[in-house]
Image (cartoon, rainbow, N blue to C red):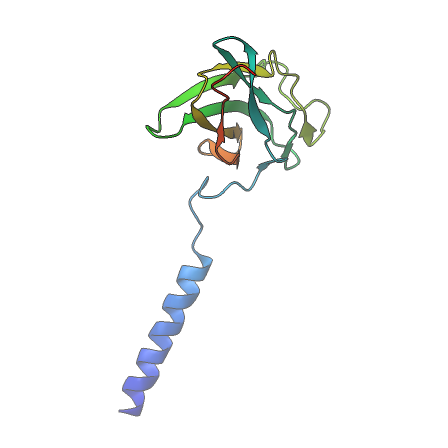
Length: 151
């Protein structure tokens, strides 16, 4: 009986060590790309013309990583429709960041994006580096509602 208990204990020990030492799947969690908080809101630009404004953000990555994708996704509350409002891809022959830097702050072509007045949205900041297996959600705003009436 003592041998059986010793054998089972040894088997459990080997199993625990094997699981602990097993490589985790690449891209399971973002370990090479991170971002500053993402902040956004909505305003009336003209009668029946609302715009979402996204504040500048910074992407941080581990040394040796290069940005492959940065996206801003507008998520419409209520129906969950997701729309890509910004999709950035760097030049393949001159990857970002330059010269071994580990941070990059994109200069958005636009910081204001079309929105439907009276609707609620969330903004998701997503990104991927050359060492990630998939795109990661790097930040998400709380829900905000675009105004529906011109003051």
